[in-house]
Image (tube, rainbow over all chains, first blue to last red; front, top):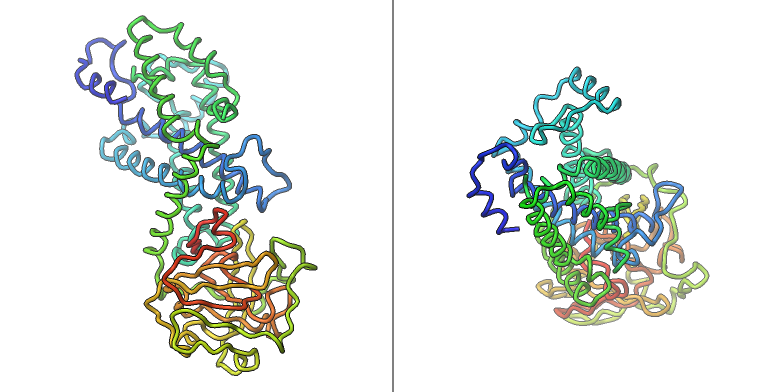
Amino acid sequence: MSSLAVSDEHAAPASSTTRVIQPAWVRIVHWVNAVAMILMIMSGWQIYNASPLFNFTFSRSITLGGWLGGALLWHFAAMWLLMVNGLVYLVLGFVTGRFRRKLLPITPAGVISDTKAALTFKLSHKDLAKYNYVQKLLYAGIIVVGVLIVLSGLSIWKPVQLQWLTALFGGYDVARYVHFICMALIVAFLVVHVALAILVPRSLRAMIIGR
Amino acid sequence: MGRMRKLLIPGVDKKLLVKDAVKLMPDLTRRRFITGGASLGALALLTGCDVVDSSSAETMLAEVSKFNDAVQAWMFNPNALAPTFPESAVTKPFPFNAYYDFDDAPEINGNDWKLEVRGLVENKKPWTLEELYKLPQVKQVTRHICVEGWSAIGSWTGTPLRDFLKLVGADTRAKYVWFQCADKDGYNSPLDMPTALHPQTQMTFKFADEILPRAYGYPMKIRVPTKLGFKNPKYVISMEVTNEYKGGYWEDQGYNSFSGS
């Protein structure tokens, strides 16, 4: 990965076919996040099974940790990877202006027309560097969900030391539901995200080699 | 292990995916893509996806758990009180919870029972229940949070542990107070000294103004509202002030030792 980063810096942005769509830092935090997120979700399902909020449990074949204690160890280890990587992403996203450039503005009219275009398969993917309004909305939205799942997780972990945060979520029991709903939203996002990456393989390539 | 690899991108066969993607690429980028894919695989290896069942993963997780103990000890504010609730908020019925059925819960005769006090204390005299009942008591209505995730609000009355530690001349510079219990298979649990000295940490003799029932740890439990439930030992028979980490029933099986709320 580091060799890729170096070659990116030296590559001249000559023609449009070789220009960098996803800079190295985005690719690195993206894949670290992917690993951290999958570890968190799979161990989280095992933790959920110890005291289910709803009338179902997750099959043990898709959980991580083997039992509650093992899952907690994974969850509280992967959380550092998720949080540190997430912070790097947020800081760089703001500092480099990427969020402003890529995700804003989001207008209701733009979202509606791009949603229509997407549903009738008329949405263009010619320029992968430019997000359409549906992408803007989903990517901005999933960042907000990402922040919420970390904060609700912290409020479940530390309902005494961070009781102001827990209170903000409506108390310990409500925070558990918020945490679960955020997970469900991320999994739903993941399904769409992966499906679209398969439909437009150039986008997957850009997230791996940058162009 | 194989299961993990398949599930890295749920529902997607990675080999087919890569094959499809590579077909669409010009030569130069194709080579880069494969290199990138290889380092992605290396990343998955490094982060433990392929070592889920091995002892190196367990060692790594145990180390992180120790690190988390230190982080939580650092986060612990000795003056931060657990939120309290009105009496009307008490969960009814308050759940009985243990690693055994209620029928197997210890049946202790309060007249024979004595609390043993050991370790770094000046006065090692054992305490009868009658003597303990004479100590000043306070009531708290706080939330009990189980490691499993559920929670319940209870009303506990008893003597602040820090008052008792003072009374017996405990060396409060020691690292732990270690509790042993009458549960079958011998329950025990260490409590770090800053938490032992927290104003809400309590030697509990009553639940909802009634003598602590057998289900909740008669004759004495240690109520620690700044910790998860398993760090609140019931049916306590001895306490030891010590610098040695003696482990605990659940702690030894992998639950995080600090487990602070």
